[in-house]
Length: 468
Image 1 (cartoon, rainbow, N blue to C red):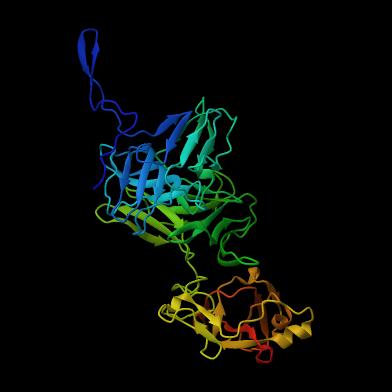
Image 2 (tube, helix red, strand yellow; image 1 turned 60 degrees about the vertical axis):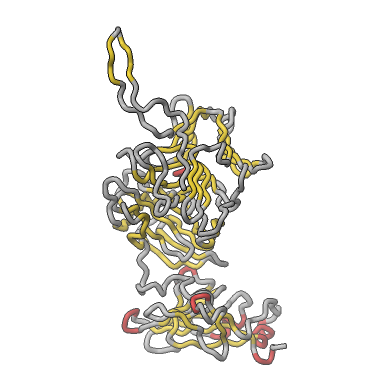
């Protein structure tokens, strides 16, 4: 059962004020507590943060600051310690961050079944902390996160910059303010894996997905604004691009802003749009956010009264559509078909990682050697290429490890770093392009009548003569 919260810093519900012998009704006061002055310390314990809630899935919210929805109830923004349980109890790994929680008109956090906290920014996603950790707004004006033993895990880096207080805005932005209420630091400038309405992804910043639904550490997928495109990558050597929205011009310092109804890229605030992705609009009384997730999808989520959080839109539209163009849809070496079914390339050269879960991917039965001979002739002797006609790859040709205007098996066999080659051609298989890949993620079947090209993948495996 949910604990009834003790609302910090809230006075009487409705009072009366005696003025000149008369009685005047005092206007209703808000029940939230969105700001704090320096110095302040919040301990990650039930006693240290009396407004704490345990959800039916085991998740925990311990709230330090709360900004109620403008309607006075509903999805609201909170700053504090959050642990997402995923059914595991007790929940022990906490993030210090900003989350969307559901509050009633008395500022109590409710909806413990459908209103599980949605963490949209965190300070320590790679280093969750346990009971007894603490966040401190220091007398010197820095926001510091410490583990239970007192060691610093993270800080905003604002020591000596005249920070006087901290507040959580109605847009979910956590802001450190000086004595004149000027912004010194804000969470909107440091996105993790999510964007809120009104937030921008600046040039040089990234959205980086979690490793998995249960692991908050940085994963391999990231979204970035470049001088000429909004691009999504899976990290490799070099990174492999699976989404590209070009601008048609170079705009140094371009940034993407999530507004109500669109994700818009512009060169600077107030400048004409360079590119726009239309999104569903936010209805009154609810909240939206978008999150780059561990499968590479950038999903838009919305709170819906009575049912809770639900994905309402897939922001990145890939070609060919249907899901097969995502890098890990079928795991490494797995082949994705039009109906998003996964299989291994062929039984003679590959086996499933888990036969019960085909989307876990495959491994070569004779993987290429991990060490490389210094000579090209030695490389060719150790390896061979398995040919997969009618199979393609998601990686943008511009971000392949190497591209050549000729079809050549030797190029991949001679290159120690090459794991696969894509032969991309029209009618003549001998007249096309060769794109080398340093790592093999998911493959996809190619329907020539849809994509208007032919493709053959050739995967490097160990030569039979080189097997031990």
